[in-house]
Image (cartoon, rainbow over the protein chains, first blue to last red):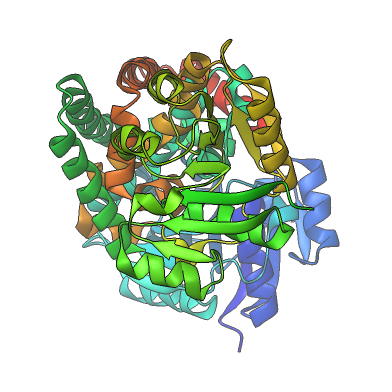
Amino acid sequence: MRTFKKVTIIGTGLIGGSIALGIKRKGLAAQVVGISRSRKTASLARKMRAVDLSSRSLTAAKGSELVIFAAPPAVILKLAPRLSKIIGRDCIVTDAASTKEEIVNKLGGIFKNFVGAHPLAGSEKKGINNATAGMFEDALCILTPVPKTNPAAFSKVKKLWVSLGSRLAFLSPSLHDKILSFVSHLPHIVSFSLMESIPSQYLKFAASGLKDATRLAASDPQLWQEIILSNKDNALSAIAILEKSLSKVKSALKKKDAVALARIFKSASCKREAWA
Amino acid sequence: MRTFKKVTIIGTGLIGGSIALGIKRKGLAAQVVGISRSRKTASLARKMRAVDLSSRSLTAAKGSELVIFAAPPAVILKLAPRLSKIIGRDCIVTDAASTKEEIVNKLGGIFKNFVGAHPLAGSEKKGINNATAGMFEDALCILTPVPKTNPAAFSKVKKLWVSLGSRLAFLSPSLHDKILSFVSHLPHIVSFSLMESIPSQYLKFAASGLKDATRLAASDPQLWQEIILSNKDNALSAIAILEKSLSKVKSALKKKDAVALARIFKSASCKREAWA
């Protein structure tokens, strides 16, 4: 069941490549075009049959019914004004970026039919070679409509994600960014910082617990620098709250207060168990 | 090939239960006795055939050739003087506790043949129902001999862990505790604190990354309070180093210094990749 004629995906890495593969598998578009800065990725996208056409030029988006930005926030903000001169005014534009407030503000001003989206999928692995058609199945996709969001465009973007198997949630861009600063950006910051704190020569004495606790530190550093910097104020607030939690642990340790320390750990442990 | 006549394990939870199962499977002892405070654990240890005899009384250790403490540090320190009145002077005594300095000091004063040990195995799950005979296969077991450690006892304890499939490492008790404060205690503190920092109502928007980053927060809070408190000074130093790493991230964010932030993340990411 074809929902779209021509769909262009800008950025065919892990997320963009998986969207492309999913669209192809479900037959959601007559034509899928992939745009990538990298010659290797562009070639791989074709070889994997993720796209019908690969291009390194934005002009390949011409005539699209839907354009999906699957690039870091800063790249999206840079390319959006150029894209607006290439695509038609009725083209639906959406994205998959990890922060939403700035993107929804700016792209909502550039494109008539912009709909902000953030699929909560992916892993610390990057690149189209790790992309899979089933990446978004049973994953949550957060859509961030604003009062001026076009209802028809919103409905089409909802349909895309439901067709890819995602569960949907709806948040304002600012609440999205606040929530993600806690559930995604803070864990990345903590993982990077924890990894950084451990003397290398001690790592051979680590067990699986440290591996899990620092898995996110294997994430693409450039991408995460861009994401977290694009959500600076929320990230700083989240760090401040973590620092308070650490201070409570320190204070209990300094006072040798076993009861207080057990209380902190137990509260965290119960929260983790209730969630998992 | 029987290495020991009677072996008694004090504390038949995840670790003690797994040691018992491993000893039984490898036929390392003529008799395995398990001592547990909990009636349920004592009964389960028998049902799982981890032990030949279960008891809730320390006196069951009488006549042992080897006694293994598999209990939290504080419990070991409490029971050791009482055990010394029950077992013979030549009995080898070892342990599996996560901190070593205080235990090696005190138990080395109480028992002629004490050998400190710390198998780096286990998980956030607890209890003998999660114990397995293969728990220590290919895991690292750190032994912490000191100048007065009896060579014959040391050799027998080494043989036990090699027979259970472990790789061995040797560290002084104080270096052990310093290293473990970084590779084990700090990640637990960070996981508990991270979990504590995240508003519960945001958790439904979390993806698998947060699950990994907080897996250790599902650990037994009482056990980890005891372990970390028994390594207070090292734990506080490790927290201070983590706080410095976090401060660098904060400072880069506040200055919107993309280059500095990417440098921190990249350094952590390279370290994680080189290790994994």
